[in-house]
Structures are given as structure tokens and as C-alpha cells.
Length: 171
Image (cartoon, rainbow, N blue to C red; front, top):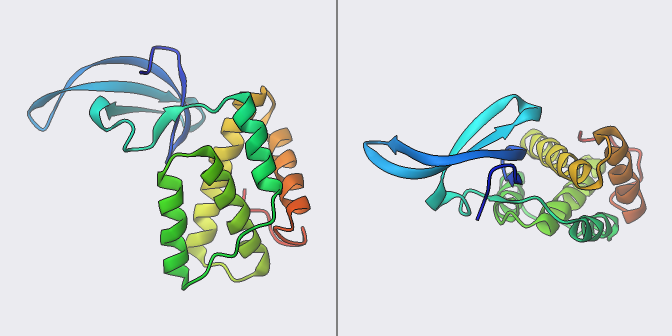
């Protein structure tokens, strides 16, 4: 499934590289694990192989998917309804799917909410982390600096009607 040197995305931490697989004892039980290096966060993570997919570990998106992601960012945002805690839970559930298109749609929709001024601190924090992870992955896929990709994401969001562009940037 995952091999040494593969570029992967860990849902909550962003882009990493598989540095190895092996066996570790976890809570007194021998388990197969995947070792990841997340260079941008200066950290290494060990993920049990049997939980890799359920924790949101996936291969990095393809260029074709990345282009589709940019299109999703440029689409008209969907309104997220409910109290701030309900909205936050909905967004977290979307992100847990690990689907790059859901990631992009969440960034788009939360950006519109942020620009409307009706976003909670926790939602704003989630938006910042989610956008940073998306930009990081797109920069790897497009082989561009994150600043250039962030500008492309911002342009797509501005064109989407995700807001007027007057709001504060999340990342």
C-alpha cells in the first residue's frame, strides 16, 4: 500500500514522506507500523498500519485531482448552517474523509464564513490549519513554492464568491 519514499498526506498534519515500515510493540502488542517524516513540521510520526486509512493517511493527490481541487475552490460556496459548534463538527467530519475535494470544499465554505465575519475562533483556527495543509499538498503536486500556491488559492477563492476579498486571510 505505502512504500519507502512515497509522498503521503496525513489528514491532521499535512504532507509527509514514508520513511519505513516495521513492527513495534504498542500497549504490549506487536503491530505493523508506517513511519512518516513530516519535514515542514519537523516531526516524525508512527502510524499503525491497520489504522492508516481510518486516521486519514492517503497518497498525495495527482496533478489531475489538484486541478479539480482548484476548480472546487473557485465554485460558489455552500452555506454552512447551525451553531458554531455544529458547523465545526460538520467541517471536521468532512475533513476526516481524507478526500481532497472535501478538503477544498471545506476551505472554500469556511473562507466564505470567515469573510462574512460570523466565524468562531475554533472555526477560524480549523480553517487556518486546513488551508495550510491544502496549500502544502498543492505546492508539492505543482512543484511550486507555498507562497505562489497560496496566492493561486486566494485568487480562486476570490473568484468563487467565497467573499469579497476584503476579509482576513486564514493562512
